[in-house]
Image 1 (tube, rainbow, N blue to C red):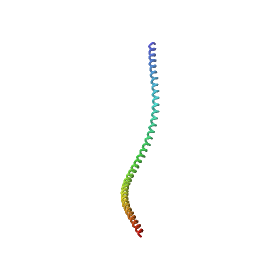
Image 2 (cartoon, helix red, strand yellow):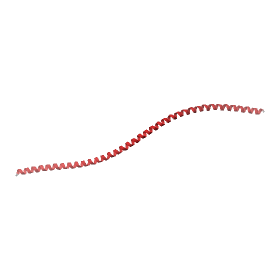
Image 3 (cartoon, helix red, strand yellow):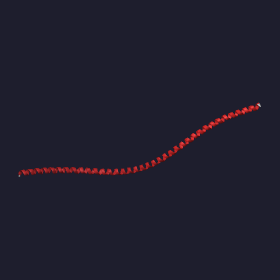
Image 4 (cartoon, rainbow, N blue to C red):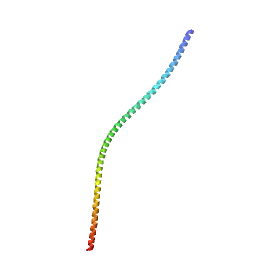
Length: 134
């Protein structure tokens, strides 16, 4: 009977050790379940963030497309402005030539007017002399 008692005590000890191990495993499983729950929440948040980022990328793509169109329009405008500037430069050159010719003509006219004014003064002087003598 002692032997049976010893076997029962040994079995009891093994059962207690196994119970302790099972309790430890159960605690580990509970911790793992909590970790999995937290990870699931994190994954859900990440999915939301990814969805928001995808929307942002779509908006940015639209903005880039609009900007590309704007750049194309601006390039066309710049090309037109360059042509206009070239025409304006030509017009300014012609105007400068015209102004130079006008200045030259004005100088000749001024000299003619001076000559005419001198002749007029001379004629007035002659007329006065003639009036005095008569």
